[in-house]
Length: 229
Image 1 (cartoon, rainbow, N blue to C red):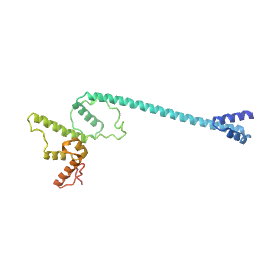
Image 2 (image 1 turned 45 degrees about the vertical axis):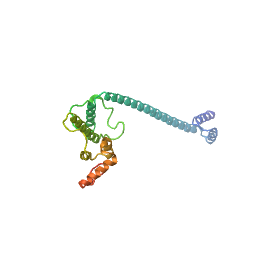
Image 3 (image 1 turned 60 degrees about the vertical axis):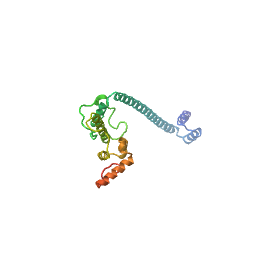
Image 4 (image 1 turned 135 degrees about the vertical axis):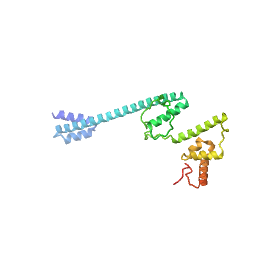
């Protein structure tokens, strides 16, 4: 019986990764109580097996999760590519009305004019809730973009009207440039300069804003043109 218990001790010691020196020392230390020591080694081995199994399951879950996310991301990118292809076949009018419809649908804070009809809003379906890609709170701020578009539409209308002889050829005077700049108050000077090159560089836009504020006797932020309080 002693030899069988010693054999069990050596077997568990090997499974637990104990060195031969550690095993010999343990046999000498517990030679008078090998049965209980075998139970101790068995408990240690069972606990080690459970830990290994738990770690293995964690690794498997992590690998499965990574594969699932990669697959989901690939499917989402493929779906978005199809949406972009569908949009490319639509007219600008339909695309414009569609994006405004979606902005109203997903964010009540998005400001957009009422254009009537659904504007092709069903031409592509949403991929997920707002913030799916970015992880950011669902905010759709189209105010600046809509103001830029509004002014460009006005210029387009003026060119057509001029062609029809309804008004003089389009050419902004310095006064009209100043009025346009006032209408764009609140929009950053960098955006103004990029959207309306005829108003000059970012620094020029800021200088004009300061000059016009001085004429009115108020103090404004040069970057936005908003009156300081």
